[in-house]
Image 1: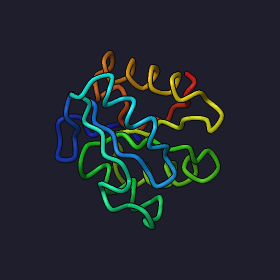
Image 2 (image 1 turned 30 degrees about the vertical axis):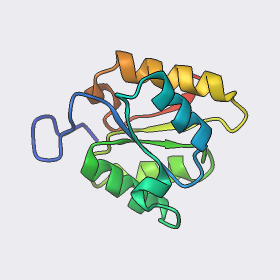
Image 3 (image 1 turned 60 degrees about the horizontal axis):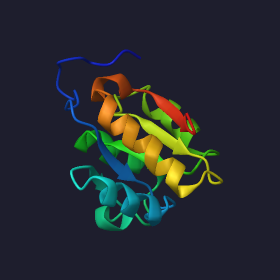
Image 4 (image 1 turned 60 degrees about the vertical axis):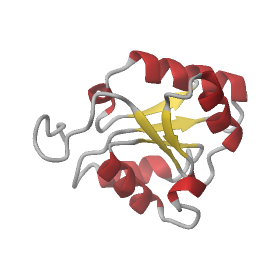
Length: 128
């Protein structure tokens, strides 16, 4: 499905992130330490501890946020279903075994270098 462009539901130019419940806090803390301007919300901050993936995707889309997750099994399937009905700001799946420092550096590079429109309806893995 093509992004909706300038229609209702389009996303802001600056990347923002929302972590699902399994995302490591050390990565969030490291990103904020690296650059406090990064707009990132942990699952605890967003009240997402027991929220289903489809609802996490919906909340993230409503807020124009890319979902950060370690869930390589279920999230890609839920994402594929979700974008059949509405646009998503995107999903980044960080491998469980990736070093925290590597995850921080790669997410930071995405944040610093990409326009949010590049991520609409896109899912990508880290390491990239």
